[in-house]
Image (cartoon, rainbow, N blue to C red):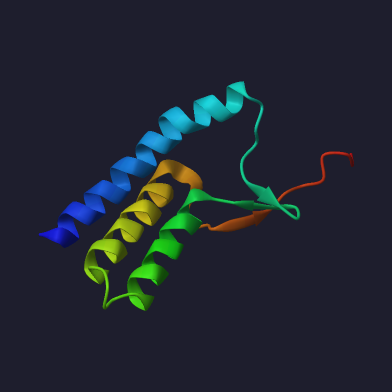
Length: 95
């Protein structure tokens, strides 16, 4: 049961982030989390949650964390952004 709930939770939280969070960042003129010219997509957070679930499987419920991460990545895929975690940003100063 925790697998299904975790997957749904990860999917819904990602959907809420895309609908509400991205509107807020657009109003604040924030283009996303960019580090050294690379944009970190929210599906990367899903991958990190999966890794945490695998590493700390003695102190947490690994299936719950893994399914939350999978829900996050699945939502990112179906939202049209694809199976992507990090992309290189184009230099805005060049033509």
